Length: 270
Image (cartoon, rainbow, N blue to C red):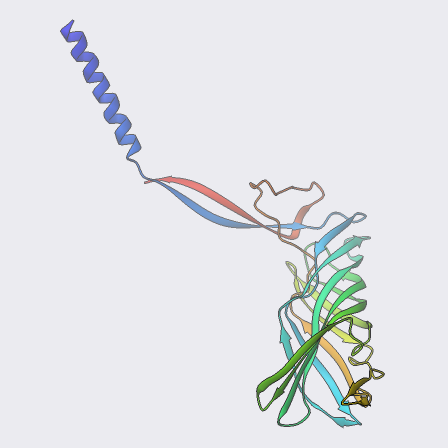
């Protein structure tokens, strides 16, 4: 009986030692990111993509009573977002529309001491065409857009110091509706360049205000034609990790130009 008991104790000790050795193994997780390319649905089906504008570089041709007004190109990254509804008739021709929020404006220096920063937030509805390799390559797009100006902001600087600022909702200082035309190119896998030109003046020439009891029309003799360039107009979007609960794979997608970021976790024994 003692032999049996000793044998069982030895076996139990050996098993415990083995489990301890196994538990003492260090487990390390290795995380890597993989980029998969997917294209829009096949022609004949509508689909929604992330569009809109990225960073904007605005330019203006300004004159006061026919005299050139010095102005500075205006760069802004926020707040420019949008969505596009696309319909492709073939692999090489399609149309699109959507909604875009843009931050557009200009910076002028009427003289050496004064600097003005004037901008509006707009909600735009584009309508355009796409021609080229819509599935996974280079294509050209062009069209027109109507913007609704819903917030105006102005900053006044004197000798480099900010002296005043204000903003107005649905201000009369600019036209409520701002029509424009645009054109651009899209590069694989979804980034591109777009130029947009506004057909009307930035300021409303009929705007009037009363200052110290005197009625004034500050923009009556000012002409300001504006255009901007954006380096990030696209027709694609990011999808989340296929392993997460928020991922829903569409059977309409096929390999091409849509970028998906996939997170992989590997267990490495050390």
